[in-house]
Length: 291
Image 1 (cartoon, helix red, strand yellow):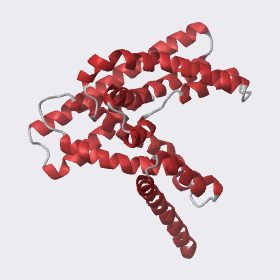
Image 2 (cartoon, helix red, strand yellow):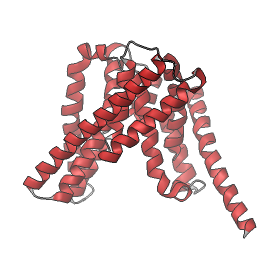
Image 3 (cartoon, rainbow, N blue to C red):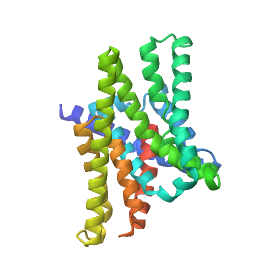
């Protein structure tokens, strides 16, 4: 029995270590070959997972898999929010709004039509799948922007879109799911409006409150230098959990807003926090794409 437990522990250790090793080595190879890292990470993940069975995230993490992914995306969105300057909206606000509204609607309609007629999915399932697929997300757009390096407004527009679209897409998927589950026009409308309001309320409140707390702690020197990055990460996770407790999937909105608020305040410098989060983002993205 002890020998069996030891073998299982060693297998888990090998898989966990393998995920980190494959992720970072893939990032390095992609950099050497001047190749988009996310493509190589996806290929390596497919080979290590479905093709060979060397790594099985479902068996390795069990029920922790989806929560781990959610928290990871929340941290990435916070880091992305730290790079967003509100002043940029004066030039790109109109285009960004069109991408978030018109772009999402067009993508949603095309994906739903394709899922229904090409894949033969039930119309409700097709609509839900399309709602999920409208998201580009910082885990994809960020690495691509770093590889392509577009200039001027194009970079700013894609950076904003890639970050803002994630909580929007998550909210859309939840609203569509609740609408399908509820059924009936009257009940659907009320449910969607209630969920939307709760997401904006609890997500916005949580993000703003914890951003204010962090700025206050830093301004008053209530956090020592060596704990600032760790405390920031703790408050980000707390903000996500607090918002998500009151309204499902509002945590991503909370952490995004938290990053934006901190980035655009003038009371304390957060450059060291941004550098830490950039390094953490590379590690998280590497792990996520392998998983």
